Structures are given as structure tokens and as C-alpha cells.
Picture (cartoon, helix red, strand yellow):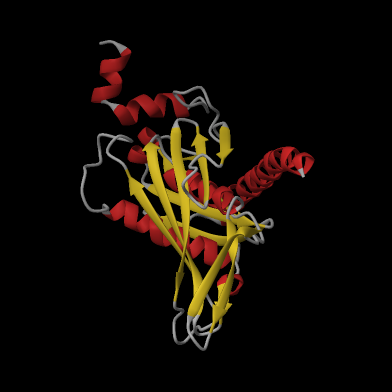
Length: 280
């Protein structure tokens, strides 16, 4: 029996043989993360955009800003509305049509992670209390699904938020008329860079940044979101609660990634800012 057939018929045994030697079929060590690439401003028609490639997993984020009335109980807060789409081109597992359950869970988790980290202060989106606020519609599309879509999505969303520039608004409360000055743009204030790292347990081995195949074999999945080197969002699905030693290992790895991603985003943005400053 050749290796490909053995993997197809006995996927758990195939992976277990590798894991016993502290290595994975793709050559990575158990705690090794895949390479990350970020590009900014990829969707010219959007108010902010970015694309992230995490290994083979690819997610693009486009943000549109629209004016809206605030909630009556939160008159000074705008809205940030993430929407994740798991495109059929990303994996044979997905079909055209309404968002699947997984996509809806990712959308809600993104909103929770951004809110908990206070990456965006929704009061910064207020134009006139009780009358007018900004709504940021954040559309995220997975183009290639090879595991850790949520990790790639939150990096793509935060990266895209860094590129958002909002026009100056003059609002007349008496006439309720709005004047939009697109020649006067102000960057959105992004207060931190929340970064998520996912882990799974396969054959009682902890694996960081799992591929799609590893996610399918896992009996426990864990996501840790770090912002400013502190945990801001945590979620575990399946399996028994992890012990303190394992949780610390996951948290330490997540903190290292948060530092790395934050440095990458700021370095790229500084390089992009230099040409525009020279033109001024």
C-alpha cells in the first residue's frame, strides 16, 4: 500500500506515526507556526482593505463606512459589523448560498474579539450623539481554507482597519442635513492589534496553527486572542479542559505571535507612509 492510500484509509494512524516523532506531515514541529504575509489597500473601491495569507489559508477583508442612527441606549456609539464568508472556492466543504454555521460563528467571534480587546473605540465613530454615527461593514472572504481561518480573519480585519480613512462630516441637527467632505479624510484610531493563535489536540499531542486536515482530526480546539500581551478572548471547543501547563504554553506562543504580527503591521505601514509624506 502506497503512502497516499494509507493516509486516505487511516488518517489518524498516519498522523500519529508522525506525531510520535514530534513532527508533522508538512515538516513543521508541533509548536511551529506557518509563514504570514499581509498586503494593505488591495480593494480600491473599499474604505479600507487588506489580504492575509497564513500558510495556504487566504482571507481578504474589505471595509465600507456608512452613516446610520445609533442605538437609543448607546447614543454615542457607532457600529462595527464583521461578516465572514467561507467561499465555495476555498474548500469543497462549502456550498453556495446563505452563510453556513461555521461562518456565522466566526463572524460573532470576530465581533467579540474586537470588542473585548477594545481595538476600536466605538465612541470614535460618533458624529452627533443620538443622531448620527459611522457603521463599519467589514466583509471577510476566505479564498483558500487550509486551517485557522479565524486566525487569518482577525489579522486581515485589524490590518484593514489600519487603512480606513473617514471623511469629515458636518451635521445640522435642526435640518438633519449632512455634508460630507471627501477631501478631508482622517485615519481611524486603532488602539491595539489583537492577534489570535489556534491550537488543537490530536492523539493527545498539542499542535499549534493546525492545517485543515489537522483540524478535522482534532478532538479539542483552542483559540487564544492576545492584545497588548494580555489575553482578551479565549475559546475552547470539545475535549476536557486543558491543564494549567498546557494553557500557559498556548498563551506564551500566542503572545510571541502577537508581538510578531504587531511589528509586521507597523513596519509595513511605516514603509507605505513614507512615499505619501515625501509627496507632500
